[in-house]
Structure formats: C-alpha cells, structure tokens
Image (cartoon, rainbow, N blue to C red; front, side, top):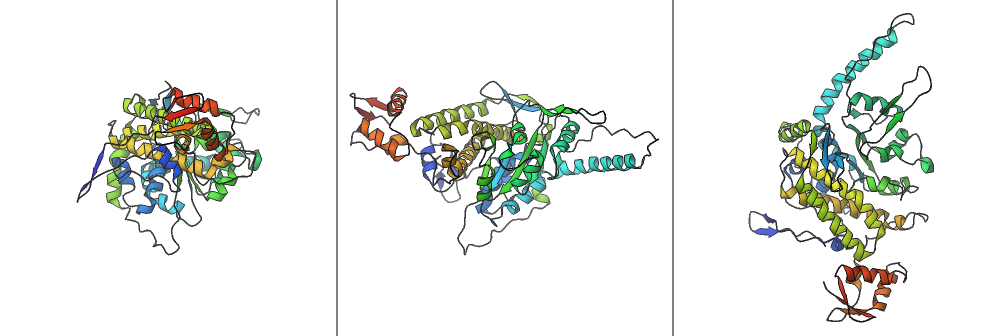
Length: 451
C-alpha cells in the first residue's frame, strides 16, 4: 500500500498535512485523484494562469512539449535500461469542456523558443524548394541544405514526411499536436480495424527501427530511430471507439491520459490569467536547463521512486487480483519515471520531494482514467466496449470477517464471485496473500487478516 506522506503543507492560517491516498481509495472513488497542493516549481509556474478546475489537465499535458527540448538525454531505469524522455498525452473529456483551450496557451509559450528556431529552418527549406522547382531539366539541381532541424511538425504529416523530418532532426525529439486523435490515421496510413498504430507504438520505444527502403532509383531510403512526443484531444466516446480493436495490443498502455471533470449546468465559465511576458520569464530558466541537458544521467531518487511505485502496484494487483491493472501499470510507471526525470533536469539536476509526490499523483491520475474508461473492455476485449464505474478494488478489504479479522474459505470465494471472477483461483489468491503476510492461515478452512 502507498505510505502516507510526512510532508506538511503550510497555509497562511494553519498547518495542514497532505495525506497520499492508497490505491484502494483511489480506485474506489468515482472522481480522479486530487493533485497534491505542493507542486514542483516548473509545474506550479506552468499552471499559474490556469483555472483551478483545469490545473490537473494542464499539469499532465505540458510534459510532451517540455520533454522535446533535451537532445541525447537518457536516464538509467530500474531495469538497467536507459530511458529517453519519450512522453505523450491524450486529453479525453466531454464535448465543449475546453480540452484544447486550457492547454493551448501553456503549450504555445513552452514551445515558443522551439518554434522561433524552426521558422528559420522552414524559411531555408522553402527557399531551397523554390530554387529547386525553378531549375530547368538541363541545369544542375541545388543540393538540399544540411541541418534543417524542424522539431515542431504540422498535424498533416504523413509517415513518409516523418522519415524526412526524423532524418533532419538528427536525434532531437520531434513534437506533434493533434486537435483530434483521429488525425493520427494519416500518419499510420490506415484506420478502423486495419489501424494497428505501429507508429504510435514505435515512437514510445527507445532505439526503435523506423524508416523505409525504396526500390526505385529516384526514391529516397531513410532509416533511423523515431523520437516523437505528442499531445492530442478527444471526447471519451470517440476515444473508446478509436481504440476498440487494439485494447490489448499496446497503444493504450503507452499513452498518458488527462481528463476534465464534468461541471454543473449552471457552473461559471473558468477564468484564465494573462500569459504575458512575466509568464515567459518565469518559464525561461526551466527551458534553458532542459536545452542544456544531455548525456546518460543516473538519478537515484527517481529510481527509488519507481521502485516504490512498482512494489505498491504489485501489492495492489495481488490484493485486487486484477491482471489488467498489473499489465497496464508497467508502462505507466515508466511514464511517471520519465516525468520525474524531466522535472529533475528542468530543475538543474536537483531533486525535490515535490517531484515524487507530483509524479505519483500523475501515475494514479493516468491509471484511474484508463481503468475507469477501459477497465471492463480490457477484461473482455471481444465484447462491446463498456465503461467501468470504477477501477479494481481490494478484495481482502471486502471479505467479511469477525471482530478478530477471522474469515473462512467460502467468504473469499463469495467476494471473487461478487467481483465477476470464478471460484477457481481462490486457493492461489489466498496462498499469495499468506506468502506476503497479508493473512495468517489458522486451519484448513479459516484465515485471519493481518492488516
């Protein structure tokens, strides 16, 4: 279980304590987990002009853009592999909830420096194309300029266009913003059941092989490693339908999700602050730190955080007997680790406790959305898409016991049946709990809770 935080949060009137909720509490709730009140400096700055209702959405959505600044930056993960800052975010929320509006200004200001550099290279590329097209058939064609690095790519990009942009970027991350997730069909070159999201899955994996070998004498062969961070939006209904044929094939587990809670019909319109020069000046030191970051870094605090999160997820998976949660959590932990490393680099390679608290929230927020929206569908990928009312629950807590915490084998069976599981597997579940010292076996048929 997640330990309670000892980090006290101070207010102007009195001292309050933020208690990190357990995974059982988070998935038992019909609302997404609440963001901790004390935030990393970069996150606090980035959402400083955002209305309170939308702060969690923006806090989750800023990372793909931030992570696109460092080049040749890797962090050692708990499995011994090096991880790059490959981060994406899909915001799913009801229609007209402000999905694009709330993130547009923060992303534009975060990416402003990148766009300025890209504009220079776009102008150079346009000049080359104009000159190339004016050159006659009997004249020598101009050579395409080197170092045409353009990281912010347009949403009408195709797979073939990605090959060229990837080659020009020379290892720097590309960044893409899609107003609607369906625009991804153009990149993949397929839609519906035929869309296996191979590019979407590839760009999340380090050292991937991406490109094309052309047979024609005038065709261009391009191969390399695709590094693409992205933001996109969708309504919940469209997102459910969009991924309905690939629920257990990788795309969902590779995506970080954000959402916007529904409001009352008579709710006030959210009020935004001014994204002015002072906002840019506050962001600048973090952007400069990210631009300067490179090399393979060992951040022991981020690794310890990932280890703790992994252990907590494993314990909860055992107690809830949720294979779906266990499988999806692996990549979600990697995403939380990458965000922690991004904040660490943006902070000048300095760790703060707020980084771990925030990234733990980011992980639970992402997992809550996945399990609530796709939990039932993942459990039975061949059935019609459904929406879960809540995520997995702690089966041990549901078992009715006497005042001393004693229960029988049949009590455990009944709880499994109530949660849509079969009686088969009850013995294995109790053995796991006993091995992990969650219960003590008293007789062949009776057990006692130890927590």
